Image (cartoon, rainbow, N blue to C red; front, side, top):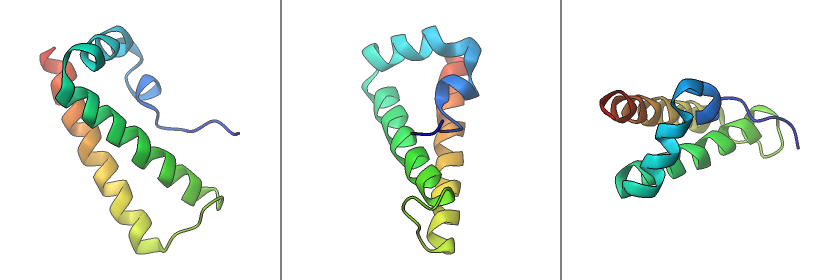
Length: 79
């Protein structure tokens, strides 16, 4: 399997320890991180034509991924 870009550890390399702690201790953060991971994988599979989807659906998933990333960043900045 190829490298999946935009993984949270890649996006926030200086926050890896904090993300691990929050995943264990904060159910809301864990849910956001899991949802981000799932959407990110879906976008990657669409981009690489492993599981193509309609362009509009891909755009909507990218928007949702960006929103989740913003929410995660807010929590990491406060943590």
